[in-house]
Length: 411
Ligand SMILES: Cc1ncc(COP(=O)(O)O)c(C=O)c1O
Image (cartoon, rainbow, N blue to C red):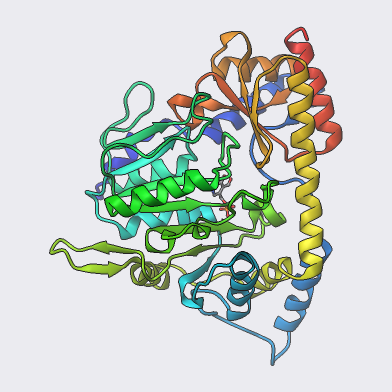
């Protein structure tokens, strides 16, 4: 008899996006002529840029030659990509990291979900609320929590509310915790952490011997040169933070799959007897056991993102999405909607009008505007009363969506 992992049964009925998909499909089946505009799921819509396509083509052709064929690659990633990451994402911002502190992977979702494996089950965890659900659900699956309450909050996890009052960036908790997940620019609120805010978190982590897991999947969308892109821009972060970055949103790799996680050697955890162990070594061991690396052609494509043409072309895509975000913010703001985010992230965090719940607003927008949003409550109890709108769409659709949302609410 195969006993199941019963912790899975604590999870909510479904992951947020399948439920949205179910409601959208039901609506589309009932209204086959409706032109639905999807500002819900955060997937990119522009095609791969020419520099990436050319790198894919060249690597595919190379792989078809006797000399160029490659089988298994190094689990941690090819040196050509790691060197490009070190040079363009870090040295260019004054950050020195060693090549063996960078782990190339097939996605930040995987990394954000898997990283908890290297920590003990007794670790006290804090997340911001609303939150990217992967951080929470993977800790639930691992058995690090009790059951969820009526609002979906799991016993044993500390939820730090991100609210209008704190600008959607919570302060560190008063009590000690072992592990904190931070995401900046934030999915779903769009808030980007400032240098003083990050400094506060790093100071707190050092004081409490905590580890920060810093998810920077959206760093390419930061528009203000004064905002940090990496937590390692903050002194002391290389002693307490793990950072994740992805090519998904910055370069349209959501289907191609490439990301990386940085685990500096100075970030340590302790054994039961108090011995200090570099987390980097545990992550290397985990990856080499459970992961066989990202395809060579994909890593060549990721390398192309760092070339002058790649940077220019992907930068133009980011600019396009951010112009969409500005259009949404301006158009909805002018109509009286309260919108946050959308300045350094491709997401707007819109307050639901007339005190509607997040799901009621979702249903109204779908039924009357034929616009798909993401209910804020799906990201956590503190997301109730908000919906997330994504800028990953065409300008035309964004403009049409604004007009329809205004009409649905009589604006
Ligand atoms: C905050 C955050 N982290 C990670 C990811 C996943 O990135 P990837 O496509 O690299 O798995 C997403 C994707 O939506 C995200 O919003």
